Length: 320
Ligand code: G4F
Image 1 (cartoon, rainbow, N blue to C red):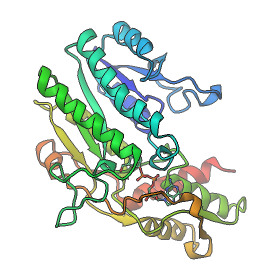
Image 2: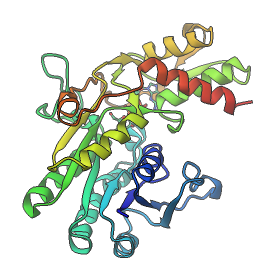
Image 3: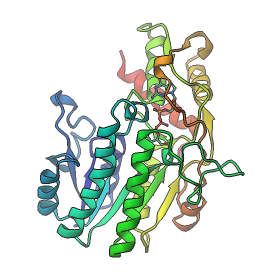
Image 4: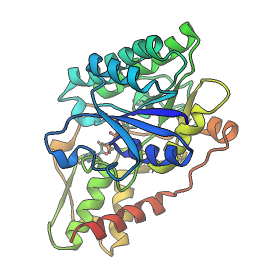
């Protein structure tokens, strides 16, 4: 039985990937960070057949011990300080977790489990406001990040490429555009909007405060994107890939559709609060995923609409 180690196993992607890998016949191991609220520690994976270990990417001793004990065949590095807005408040922590810790992982893996393949969760935030003339971002697009998070991810992306080339390793980057689901943290805009809509509908709150409504994102579903991760790791050679829906919509479009689904008009409820604006905004994302569609036959199964419908249904049942 092949062994997979997932860092960030209790996150949105970590939990969907665990389910997917178990179905593919893997023994799944994961690293959990200690959480002060014990119930939140493993909330997304508690019913899954996975083995977990307390650790932290930035704690080299825990990482060393876990790698030595598990001896994974494949490592999916999904752990990160993943909130772009908050990376402006925690820039040093962001770089330590998202860049330096990745170097630590690469070094340790090279010594302890030299045959292990590594997947690195790279991000469309690395492109910043660079857009090719045809309106897409692709592997050749200049990376011009506009947040500490984006900068930290560019460093990790380059480290993975460096180790791959220098030491002839199967290390890959998946540059994933935004991906959402009912398991998304509720301080990311999609789940914040959906959860608030349900609370408005149930008369729990009256308004929804947001920041920039005009930035555009290429939003897919996390379940589709973990399938892409698996395909990337099972391709014949280690490469870098873009995973995206090739469609872009504004936060305003998202609100318009989601409010309409429950019979409301977003204009009656959404107000702007400067507190949610960022020092620099990434204005537009639309990824060219033709490479993965062609070479790995990947394509998303969810649409923008079916993803939002699933999220609404989840919160309608959850919030009473
Ligand atoms: O949902 P968001 O916080 O996602 P963002 O910043 O695009 O980052 C996500 O996608 C990246 C891939 O490109 C990942 F790497 C990253 O880890 C994360 O998953 O914000 C989306 C947009 C932004 O333009 C933001 O300014 O929504 C805008 N927004 C407007 N009001 C808001 C809010 N974002 C948040 N989080 N909260 C608001 O109230």
